[in-house]
Length: 314
Image (tube, rainbow, N blue to C red; front, side):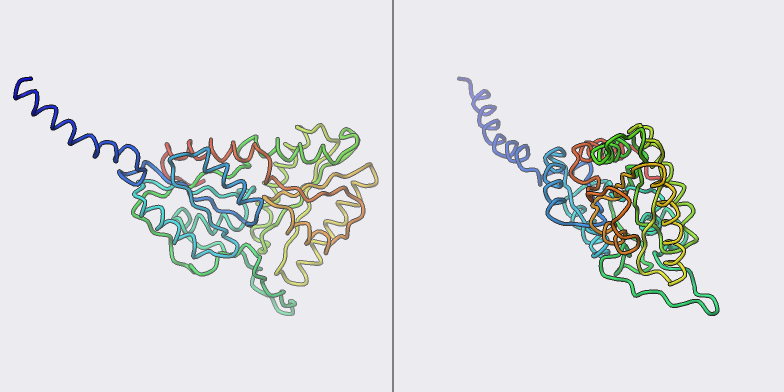
């Protein structure tokens, strides 16, 4: 073999280990994007779901934050993803209603909204009764205060699942599993509404649109919503209960009622519903959208779509 060929062979052998290391080690080289999943609630069921999501996003860094209990963790997980050399972070909120109070605050933290949108009751008027203390399980984002999120990587907010037909598909499946004859029954979505009455009407409009889509999908007689809230003032509690009781009374005089959580997990809204209206007059099994394979499919497709698009107000 000629001397020049020997030199070429030696150079190729020397370069081979470095190339192999760069190909096999996912930590080497910048990654195109990472994913940050924001969950209203956590638990064993979500951890199982998270495993499926990570398997579907193989090679993409994925972090998860339970925003209802650890708002400061949002910034920490952003920093963790950035440390893995991603150039873009797709933030996927698992709040099913785009007009939820938590979404307003999230948009503010991401710089998409000028003013904060705190999940608190309206300022009291003269003679108004005090509100109940906010519990640890509520959807307040503590810790960060008014400080915006910061990241050297671009932050992109994905759309909520109510912008996709997947939500109506999942909820319709939950409702029809409870109904004997959907054509003669009503479907009711039970969701966690904003504590502020200023944000309530926008939430109700969005929730009613979801309920109507579920009615059509499941071929139900009628659709309605029931709102539950905690940490509100006495007057708000009375107004909520009166409106919800009137809704339930009207629906039950015409037939059965299948009630479904408009939530990732139905435990919290179920407890609030039971406390407010009791358990009579409707069918309920507490199954939210968590656990349906279409949720994982939506997260994967939504993440991919958002990773290719620009940052914008959603």
